[in-house]
Image 1 (cartoon, helix red, strand yellow):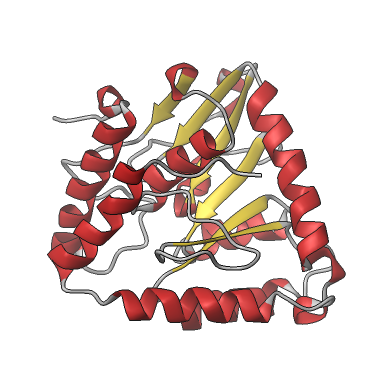
Image 2 (cartoon, rainbow, N blue to C red; image 1 turned 45 degrees about the vertical axis):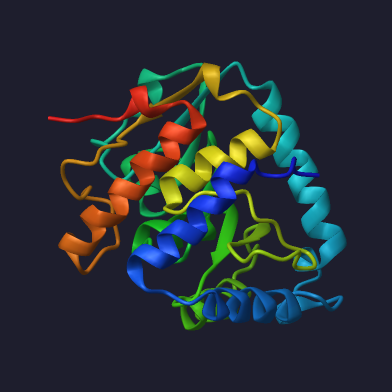
Length: 242
């Protein structure tokens, strides 16, 4: 359902692991556990999260992302956004950056590794589609979120992503590294050209106010890899540098 990620986007993940000294084993373990947790007919007690339902939700999301005239991706460096100022637009948000939007009705999905705090929670509670990512150091986080969201009267629809090098059942690796550039990779994997996609709040000079980081210096290093990923995607012109 998603186009395979280009080699240069997948190889960036190896480069990032090498740069930070992370082992791929942790990424593989988190991905495999997520796949296992969501593989039965009632994951976390929710039939809407089984593989058939997730595929149906992804087809619907793909249709929306492919056909909407104006698509805007919101990054963590965004200022607050009044949706009425963009009457013809739909939005994809990078994790906590969904908090920049004053109205969630035109948010097609949030791409998240789970650290978007109350902003991600607000989107999940509103039923916004969540593209939930598994990596080596967020296994406990995504498990906690899945358990909590499963208690909602109407849990959000889900797509599951990973960053391991092998195929993982029921999951996808769209490429990329941070939530922001992975959102762009995901959109491209759904078949939409990035040439007519707009970006707000993608910046490398400061850590965005919607970021869930607790280590600003390491976050800035991560943003350098976001820039490299965007360069490989051909959209580095969207970056703000001051």
